Image 1 (spheres, one colour):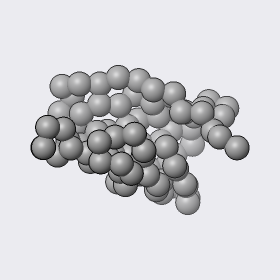
Image 2 (cartoon, rainbow, N blue to C red):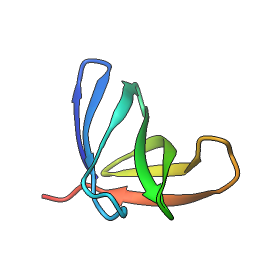
Image 3 (cartoon, helix red, strand yellow):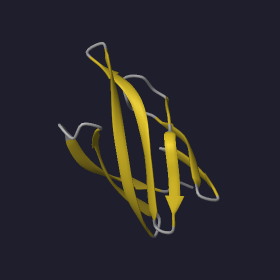
Image 4 (cartoon, helix red, strand yellow):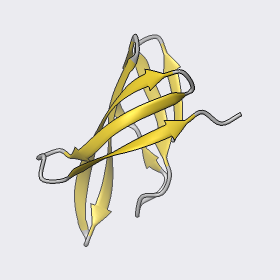
Length: 81
């Protein structure tokens, strides 16, 4: 994750997907919450992944999955220096 906030807007990129880097879309930052989506490809078809995260110290706990809800998981991102 490479994230940048400016007011309530969240921008950046996400590495590690089949179409890396994936540009963050619809990014929002509000108090201790962040949300955004990225579009990648799976078996030749575009897939929109939706991320919702909660900030906790130097970490963000993300729940993310497909836009239609057919798949999801969790991941923790830790700030690097």
